[in-house]
Image (tube, rainbow, N blue to C red; front, side):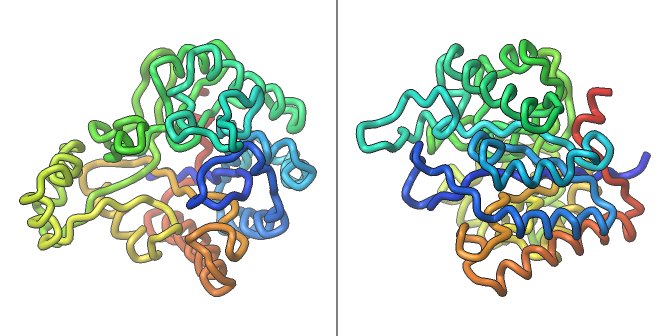
Length: 318
C-alpha cells in the first residue's frame, strides 16, 4: 500500500492573530498569491483541498480562486468547509467591543443549535459558489465538540480533519487531542483523518515510544521535571506544515511516522501565509518565497522519493 499525502489549505480571512478574533475581520487580499501556490503544487503532482471559511468563500477574491479550479473539483481539487465561528453567520455571540470570547472561537464550544446553524450557513454558501456540496470538514482552531459529529452527519459530511494529533488545547479552552495519533479511524458515521503531527527527539527509542503512546508528550509537558529532561532530549512536537518548520524538519517528521507504520499524511498551511506580512510565519517576501518553495519541494520529495501518491480526503468516503 502506497504512502498518501493530502495537501490541505486553510482558506480563510486575514487577521492579526495577536489581537484576537473579531467579526469585522473579513478581508481576503491574498487570492492571486494563493493561485500561484496552488498551481505550483499541482505542477508538483499534488492534489489540493481548499478548506474554506465564510469570509473566503463569500468574497469576490475567494470566489475567483474557486472559479479557477471549479473544473478540477473532485479530481485534483476538493472544496471543503472550514468553520471560523467569529466571522460565520449567524454572528452571535459577539462581545460589545466586537471581539469574540476565546472560548467561542472553538466551534465545538458553541451550543448544539449555534454550531449547526453556522455550519449549515457555511455549507450552503460553499455549495452555491462552487457548485459542489462539501463532504469534508475542518473546524476552526481544530475545535470539534460533543455535538459536532451529529451536525456533520445531518448536513451530509463524511470526513473530518479537525483532530490535531498529540495536541492539547485545553489551556485555551479548546479540545484535548493528546490521546490521538495520526491514524485514520471511523466513529459516529464520520471518517476522522487527523492533521499530521509527530514527536521528535534526540533519543530515537524514546521518540518511537512517544509517537506510539500519544499522550506521553502532554504528560511530560505537564511535569516540570520531565519537561526539563525533555528539553535535554530535544523533545518537541512538530506539525507537517511549512509554517514554522523547515523542509528538513518536515521530512524528519515524515520518517518518524513512517517508522511506526503511518501511511497517510496531511500537509497543511493557512492561506494568508502566501502573502508577506499577513501571518507571523511569513513576515517578509523572503520568508514567503521560502514557505512556497518548501511546500512545493516537500510534495515533490514525498511523491518522488517515497513513491507516494497524492490524495483528497473525500476519497476516504468513497
